[in-house]
Image (cartoon, rainbow, N blue to C red; front, side, top):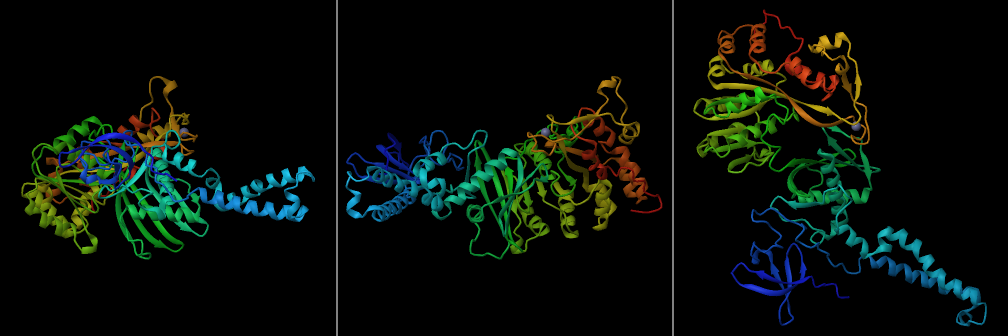
Length: 581
Ligand SMILES: [Zn+2]
């Protein structure tokens, strides 16, 4: 069967300047198959084709460009493929037909149309009817529709779903044709990823269980109820993802990390893949990070405008340490990157040391810690000081050594961003002290401490209004509005738009303390925690009442959701003056 279909006649510019006027027979990830004037078919590798060629698989910047509008969908010819089941079924059907007919009236009688013609017609019809369940049993619906289904799957998926394509970290597209063994798994993996992107998920979990592969999406920080995928297909989907992430498929019982890219419609995502071996089998977690990050606009991320201005002023500092605190998944890295993007292009050399690098930044040196080689933040930071950085992001301060190196860098004319595991501004001071930082270092090196949490936003379609009691309003420190009709708080309900969760999207809640003289005086004199708390309350930007007024009245979020941030304000804690820090 002639599977090579002529697509078009085109002029193809080559890397050496020549232009070939040829017929394109076939396109694939490997290259173009072209028919020359003399009728011979030749393979042109993509690196031999000029990048200006509109149908080129790789963009100027090297990122993958699989199957966009100007690249016709690749239909890989497969030997027999979907036809196989149909042919097999028909052969069986014919055999049955023959056996049935022979039993009914003898071999010679079958072809005698004068004798009982209705039996002849019936037996003729019986063959294909018997063939259908056979095909369905072995090949599913795909067996019956054969190649037509393959064409459909290469076309756009259901409306509203972005079309997803995996590519390796080196931007090599992963296609069913190149990884034939995993073709069906890859299609499922692409479908799952399309759903994850559409739902705005941050993570996709795959867990092998005895009943199949359990798949769950984390949306707005909450794991949605899982779905069970077919065991065989689910395992193949996991294998396809691992292959894209460059993992060693043979090392079954070892924990592994990998990374790859995902093109979803017009968006490019970086995927971090982690696998481990659990009791019930393999488990795989895929984190989706939008390439290029979430943006530079702090107010859009939820920061009050006065605080955003103050934070942006900090980026003009030439030296000092800026600390972000908050638990994992509270958006600290996004905030730091929003600040780093403001510094980008101001002629300052940016260097980041992370575990692993989460977002990519143009014109910056980004170093991923390699835990396997035993590198630490402190070691990597010491080594990178010779790279002449002006602005440094140290992923996290975990120990005394890392803290000392970071503060040394801050004191020697570098602007250093870092994160620390502490619940509030006050707790960050406590943590630094616990790591053995002197009051002098704290006062000279530290520029600001930022705290962050993410709150889920109520789904505007289904949120329920209720009238808050006086006590509740007093708790939040809000004043009733003059118009009694708008005096309502909202709580979540759940509808199809939010998949029953009652929430859609998240925004940040921030608190920021820029070191000023009043705070420095308390730190210098090593005064009681209570005094430091008072100084912090006076100097820090962002209070519970501010956020309650901004978020609760208009139903941006619910009181229960805002309650989760109270810890970061040390709300309701009155620390005794006797205890020293
Ligand atoms: Zn809803």
